[in-house]
Image (cartoon, rainbow over the protein chains, first blue to last red):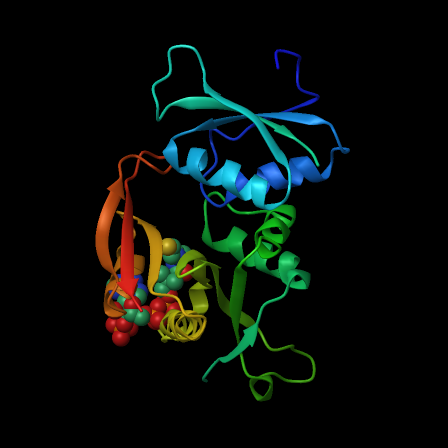
Length: 82
Length: 154
Ligand SMILES: CC(C)(COP(=O)(O)OP(=O)(O)OC[C@H]1O[C@@H](n2cnc3c(N)ncnc32)[C@H](O)[C@@H]1OP(=O)(O)O)[C@@H](O)C(=O)NCCC(=O)NCCS
């Protein structure tokens, strides 16, 4: 869990649907078992990105707010490629 | 001259990205457009000049397009644009009417979209098609403009 992800992506400046699209494009460059840490902001990507990633068959390893961030603030999402 | 409406496929990514770049300050590049077009549930319609309006040296010009996404009984407009020379001739209205018919046939109950609060043309267009404001995301866009969430029952 605390191991570093292989890949990192910041989508805090993106809007729907680019939040998901940028995540999907990043996953496509990875190999099975690789992990991606995504930094995202706001409830909308927090609701939609993990759901859409699961629909593609990948695993959501964890989702957690960054230290000091509120429920709708900046979160880190850890994804493992299936 | 009345535009013809054509279905959109992922092979159109490059053309659509070029058109997007002309119309938006934060355009989707070709890879991003391809990503949108291959997302589960995405559909699209392109408005083109009819081929009899073009000459052998000049191919029919694309005028605008609309992409939407359907998930269960809801749909959402992803992007809509009409290139400046073809605006105010009813192209966007036709694209939107086409999408409304298509989602209705797919069993959709509610059609959603987001529009910047300072986008008078977009808001007037959506109101003309009976979309109503149902919410707002304050300072949603990068320049701190609010996003207006609109919905139309299908
Ligand atoms: C918004 C946009 C798609 C409208 O395209 P269009 O083809 O010119 O729209 P239409 O000719 O079909 O207009 C239909 C109705 O919308 C309204 N409308 C459209 N443009 C308008 C404008 N500039 N000012 C006021 N009302 C407008 C009118 O009610 C119009 O009906 P009318 O011409 O009979 O008065 C176009 O201006 C555009 O591409 N803008 C930049 C991208 C954008 O903002 N997209 C929407 C983001 S959500």
